[in-house]
Length: 552
Image (cartoon, rainbow, N blue to C red; front, top):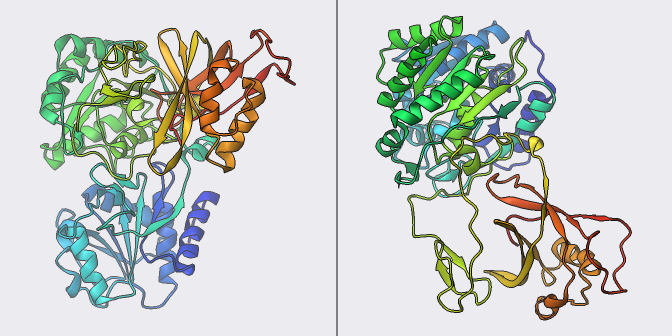
């Protein structure tokens, strides 16, 4: 080998070998964020495999550009690699080399023609694999296992989940059986291997009120219609031009072909050199447009669903999401186009016009559900804090007891997102507490707990006290008892005496690390509370507390 692996790349490979040695499974994932150097990891794995005489390796993916990039990267790092392609799009179909780069579209029916059989299959962009036994990937892998029961399959991806089925290694039909190693985005940015991302802005977002979902994702035609409002397009482009004035290379994700052209026309009105790439472009046309962008001939490149994976241009220092997605994977892939490092690049500016950050969370803390929703579902409901009656989320007054619900916090504003992009960028703030409400919280399979709701002006924030849970949850409650002037040891006792509890004058909140549109409580201030009970003693003015935005 002619290169040296970074420490985290070595750890990823060691993690893979440890996974196999522990008999955890044969088909693990390596989670490697965009810009972490998947090519180096693949090259080392291939080099290690080639040290065993007669071993055969196949790198499989779905995009011609990924095949060519993978082979080119392998040659640079491992010049003696003896490889060939089996891909109609590349223009070569050979199976006679120990290392084969194959397009799944070409090779999926050819497993029994590969002699000797393959020993190791590496799947790049593994998040493209659906959990369906009838797909090309699944059929090919099943056939390969018939040819060689000992074949091992390793998936590499920045996003180990799909919108339609959740995590790639969980559930029925999953090809992969676990995660061998997960390289942290936060660590890569802290150590300078990835570019930090920031956000700022202030113009209108796409109004998603009338945009429905199909298969869990926003319906493309409805999204395109909502995004194509002429006034919105004009204000969006004007903001990108303004905020990107000191940026070199702008990548824009649009909501459709016609929307992309509207954006392009508006950029041209501002004298910005711009190109558009779509899935319907011919190879020659698309390659030329991308080459012009990479060379600097074009300052701005607008794309429609074609540059989310396999696109490598480190100089991109502004990414504009002029579209919405319900897919956590797509969100991460889009932002990831701007996280590669380059000379003179301090960070990448993310401009989000589709409420994507609020929907999915900070880029270093995204955590999708095990299984994504397949549609809009039933109308959301909420529970009356006074009588626990379930009512429609839009209700302002409980029909059973007359309780008036506090004004709701908006899920999104009329401005583009301008908050933190990383959990480390989150800033907390103190808010005055106007009133506090205590109620019983029920959750299937768990003991009841006390939900504490702090009304602070136009918003409310909640925490959960869990006397009956045991362990860490109960210990947190016990540490609060002196501050509350509580003697209760159970949830029932706590609810009975809660009306006499001492309440803080203010609380410190910050956007949740799981989802920025929700707040979590991190600190309480009791310094301005009148000391009504001699039993209350404090050693410090402030009490630190990590609130929970998801109840036990």
